[in-house]
Image 1 (cartoon, one colour):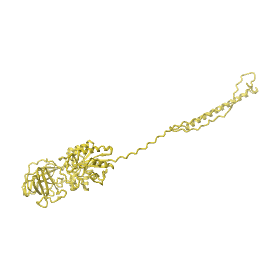
Image 2 (image 1 turned 180 degrees about the vertical axis):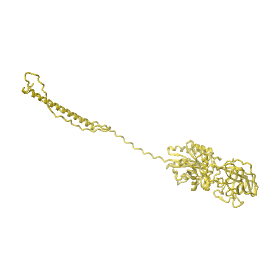
Image 3 (image 1 turned 90 degrees about the horizontal axis):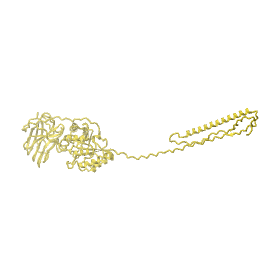
Image 4 (image 1 turned 180 degrees about the horizontal axis):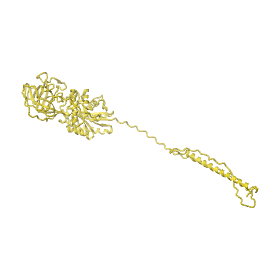
Length: 577
């Protein structure tokens, strides 16, 4: 051990110096420790500040931060306290031991950036084809022919609905639907529409008669439990006045014919009607289907319309396997079924649907409106129109307000009669090849323009001038409140007469429910008869006569004759409609 050079007289001083130096070294160590801790905290705070702050974000790389280094302080090694000795110890010089410099911490490694997943670009949407325009097909049936039931059965099979335009005055007639048939059609979802009472060309009628035909037909259908809102013009014949009548009677639309392009006509026309139509009271339709139409014709009428969309109305009259209509307005049940089977699935494949006319047009159901009432002729007034046959109808070649009647197997030729009883008009009938039935000239079966009105409970005096090579008799027909005409009764025979004679007969009492009358002298043997100057009077107040009257039955027979279905005469160039 080295001895101290201090003298013994300074022991207290030496102790204080040592304490001061020890205190200074402790302070220096504390400062170094505090500075190290501060540097460490700063480094951690920096890491936090630049670290991952948001999920998915890449942490910024923190540059290494130098940790402050405490200044190197020479710290004297403390001298151990000497053991007491009698000898004065020699102080040992103290060599300062350098304080190790704090090694700065390695900079915190920047976290490895998390690979950010770049979302895959959304695939470019495939161009979707524009939806096909909707095409609506309406299957319509005219006149109420009973053979249309075959089409109705097929439509039910394929869940298709149609519109049936009905002449209420023919319902129940031979080969026509009955009310029960119509009820079944409606129950299956088909529409029952109007087609006039007795199928006349409305443009040839007076305004009042046209109103009776249209309005009263709608009343009849309504009274049978149907909701008629759609109408079809007989023969597709119309004008502005008729269209107004149809509207005024409460219908929401009315169909024409032959206004759309097809193989059969209207080459410059559109393939489809617009929805809504330009005019609801002359909606466009294809030519009526007849026996020359093929499946391709039917299909083409639809596919051509599908190019632009719109409304296509088909019109059918007879549905039968054989020739059931002399005009050829037929389609076979097989062909109709093939068309229906092709048409039905197009609702899902081509946006082509089948609807009734009412479904296409829409609109509220309007109240029914009655046509004008025709009063009976006053007492002593002839109730017939054009009784002397002085005016003629160029469309029929017959006297105005008169029509041809007859039935059975025979050949009857009608011509202007000569000589006449008075004036310039008369009508002659020549019968040949007679086997059965008869032929006669009758006041037109209508709703009052021509046919006289009668009162139930009254009797009427029938009078006509005639000359004939064979016997003759009156055939009498009555009209009921619906507008249906039926044969009622016949008079006794009148003898053949080479010169004009007057046939006079008073009817039995008119039965309840009857509103009109028509009658004529008939020929039912091979020969010829000419008639002129017909008259009808209420028996009460009728003018007196000089000729004897045939006997009148004491009891009125019931009206049991079949329903007469004499349609009006079609215009020369018009479709049957």
